[in-house]
Length: 305
Ligand SMILES: Nc1ncnc2c1ncn2[C@@H]1O[C@H](COP(=O)(O)OP(=O)(O)OP(=O)(O)O)[C@@H](O)[C@H]1O
Ligand SMILES: [Mg+2]
Image (cartoon, rainbow, N blue to C red; front, side):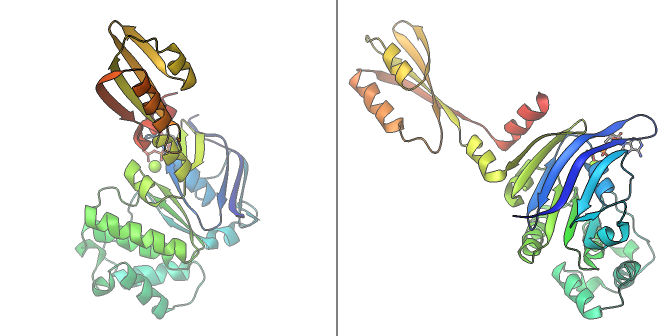
């Protein structure tokens, strides 16, 4: 897959000396949904703002569809739709006018058919003549998404689009994001909801203190999540050392009981053999306990390092 965004040795130090981005290198692939996960203050918004040209980088380079964000700002900005973390909308403007105006800002002429399509998709069509002040918080969130889509961007940044949004709207947003991806839009999302990242991303990138700690395919992360430790408490008179060696078990003896920890992976094909060996060794199983990793634990493990 080709890259639509290439970030090279990007640094951002704010005027007060805060290092928000510390040597970021990241390739974003054409047509993917990538989630940026990280604690408060990790640098997610700073990264997005820099790519979108709202904040100047201190050093490093970013290419959007092959164009340099500094030299070709107008070209790169046109390719991008941004849903910012903070909602800021003119309270007395009408929904339809907000979207029209946003499209015009990018130098495009009015296209009410396109705008109607977006508003219908976001279930805002019946609100088109309402003023912003008359909308609920969730509706306002949808208006900023409509705004970001007004000029048909190839890339959409969503900075915590579902913060404070109810479950129904969140699920609608997931559907919309997936639909946009199937239309060929590349999506970069930040979220504090791990299950959201799990639900919709192709890849996940974990950021902490301005650094990218990990970027991985979600399924590979899920594979890691598929790792379980299965603990057996068994009673036997036989020596289990060779069994422990064969299956790489950790073993704790406390006569007449033995505790065995078996590391199980979803791809494991030796588990049945292990059970059969256990049986042959006349082990009476007294207890079984399993412990598996969640994406949340993986996240906390990585961020905690
Ligand atoms: N304009 C600014 N001037 C100085 N420091 C800033 C500015 N904007 C952000 N920072 C600092 O940069 C760091 C990264 O902030 P950023 O907003 O990028 O984090 P974030 O990952 O988006 O966090 P959150 O999850 O809370 O939205 C923080 O330490 C923050 O205080
Ligand atoms: Mg942020």
